[in-house]
Length: 201
Image (cartoon, rainbow, N blue to C red):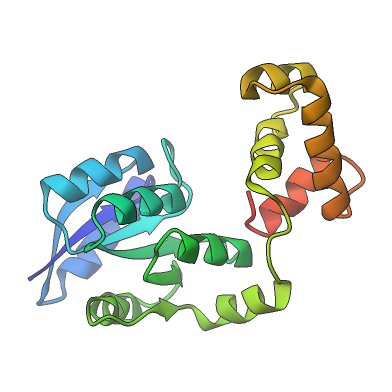
């Protein structure tokens, strides 16, 4: 039996997925979590073969959870599921060690097939997202610029950002200015919106 972990914060979606996957004769859903920071513990406790991770979760994103799980339990195969077809998410998921990247509206049979393929050593990527990621190009932001932009998303002042990130106000201003310039945005709010739409935040 293929032992599966489901990480999805929406209970109805998680339970529906568990039911659908449980109908497969070779699958057993042995663990379900609603938070990204619960993934690693559950994967270890239940000795899972494949983790299916939603991107948007409290505690940690599916991509962050994937990176942690990949570093700690490299034998576990990682399938990222998303509602948001953002090319930047695909790139970040692959960098985190994901074996498959699928949108949630894919048929259940396609998801089951993807699970079997990754266990056979294949990589499975939604073809529309793959094409969009290639067309979009690489994320121009550095890790630090991304961190400052993410922190600025709630409208914090430069002084508040500097305190939260342990940087000087001048450094925060420089990172924001560079990020705004790279994204061809008019201001920090627009830079945050653009980066989010592309899946870079």
